[in-house]
Image (tube, rainbow, N blue to C red):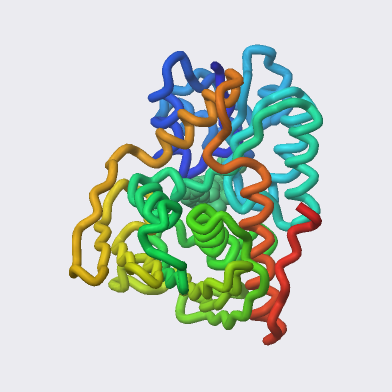
Length: 333
Ligand code: NDP
């Protein structure tokens, strides 16, 4: 399977190029950058055969089976629509688009064309989150009363570009991190948030976009969800807790791109450590995607998952802006 990278991005460089190449018979033929010189340097650095600044050059190449879109967020929609029109399978970064309507259109266009479309929500591929999801789904926790998410991190200096100062490119912590937390909660509980309240702030990094947000979500089952996302917390660490009538899970340092962290389960007998697999998150995401392209199974997070995580993030932003409780609009999905 031959790939084209749309976007000479950090995430491709740090995780996804290796994950693609870890799949048998998969390689990367093209990278597209808006800057031809940067694209050529990126291609050379990563051993990619060719670079271009013209999207159609990649999409018109009959050897290209799939594209990975990791440009800034406002470009995902036009680039994905163009790729789908040319019959390419799409692995798209989150948030899928700037609006729910655009995201939904991308997903239905891929469906109509019979193409695989996936959202690169990495967390649900982590051994830690798979283990927690399994404990919840097995009933080990009893009725799930609440989920608390600690996802206030420190945005590394090399990523402090458009994310902290460019609303038009999809900057802000809400499109960046709330989408991941929404996907994780949906993955754990198998249901979609109903209504949210939120407050957002700029606490030292954001320029014209929020860099911190706290929100509370209601779920159809009655579970309450509390989240904290930020770019400005150097020492907070990340984590997630799930509290049920029979047991509680406390997981630390698991809201991350690496297969690390620890999970404890507390119940009437005390505290025990929960073991989990340390496989690569992006390797699993790519493995399921490439299998889906061959007709076997589904990607770990499909297009509808990406639309729904975006819907929650949009509701959180509207709630933070308006000061009102906001019902999550999934556009009929
Ligand atoms: P980057 O800022 O690294 O890349 C985004 C775009 O910025 C690139 O496509 C590139 O444009 C341009 N760019 C990158 N580096 C430079 C540079 N040194 N000088 C000038 N321009 C540059 O963003 P990320 O890789 O952090 O994020 C890309 C996408 O991936 C976003 O949608 C983000 O939300 C998502 N993401 C997802 C993660 C996940 O785990 N699922 C983790 C991190 C990001 P061009 O291609 O035109 O050269």
